[in-house]
Image 1 (cartoon, rainbow, N blue to C red):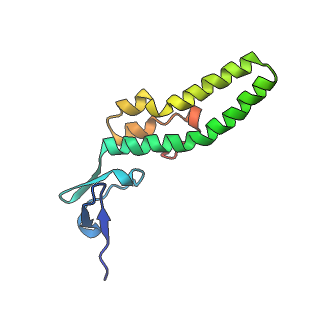
Image 2: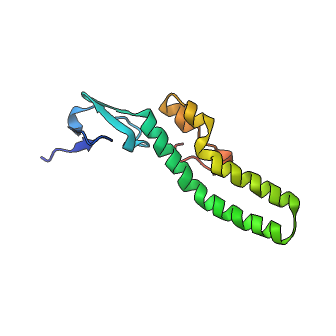
Image 3: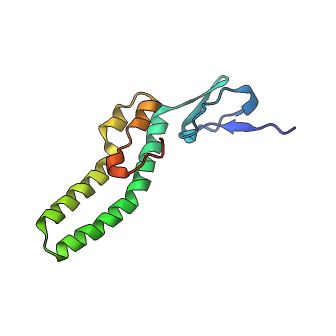
Length: 123
């Protein structure tokens, strides 16, 4: 029989059969081993969350660039302003106060702005 080992964010490892592991693997890269319990390090989870926001917003920003260029060509001031507002919101998304203020993994998952970024990968 081959043992399976779990490695936490700091490189510590433990036999998977001998530790309590979180059921949710959303923030696997934030796992921290303490004795026989693996928990999620909230600061590391926030960094992972922000990286996911950046990944999801990239194609949204690219698409918004097209919207802005069309508004620019049409000299549509209203559409240009709306596009600028959306792009700024997308740029500011990783700095959302809901992310910074989260004190639990559940609150962090709830910080996903579905209106801006679409469906949450943490649903």
